[in-house]
Length: 168
Image (cartoon, rainbow, N blue to C red; front, side, top):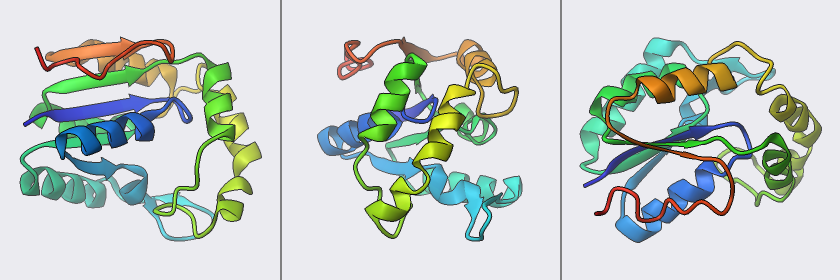
């Protein structure tokens, strides 16, 4: 079974692509947002060791999987056990449009209204993608993509089809 990592800027379509793999191939799905943050306000990152244990347990418990998120530090943990990489490197304008139109994510927010209350902050975050120098940045993502030694594809627009990549 496939062992896939998907990453990119917020709003790039990571969750949408992951859901396609889950539905079509029955892969287990891990959204890194669900373990990267402590349940407190304001948000604070969970200790990396705590996240590492959860990621490794998920991989151990699933023959095939798709893991998605924007956290290069967490993706690095899963990379040695993963076979494929999809970097959704879409233009910022597309990411913003996707974020504005995203459906409610009940595993992250108690309501669509709560999700939308963070929209302006998310827009600013998306716009800073190429200027940041952290584990969520364009620079970090590109370096991770370049280092990955197995099958990989970079998606630069919504028209690129990744549906059959790796099935040949």
